[in-house]
Image 1 (cartoon, rainbow, N blue to C red):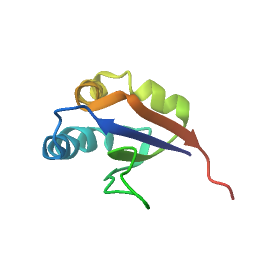
Image 2: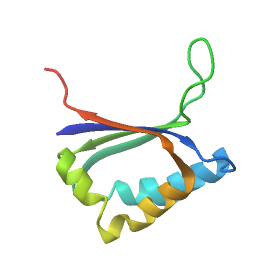
Image 3: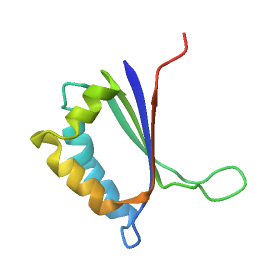
Image 4: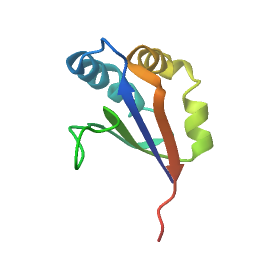
Length: 103
């Protein structure tokens, strides 16, 4: 299993309310149904020690593998998720990292 974190700011003009509604009804609803996804959680940053958080959102995703996740993102089932992400997320701020648990 692979852990994926995606951190990003919302685009200017995208309200937290609009994003949360999309996240619940589109992003989370569809992504959680994908065969390669074991778990999908989305968090809204509220701040950081000493100031404002550098991102608005973090997605915490457990997937079968990084390769399976990348392939999943190109499927017709994920088209609405990818489209919405492009409309909501500031892609210049986006950071995606992946790795495995140290055991």
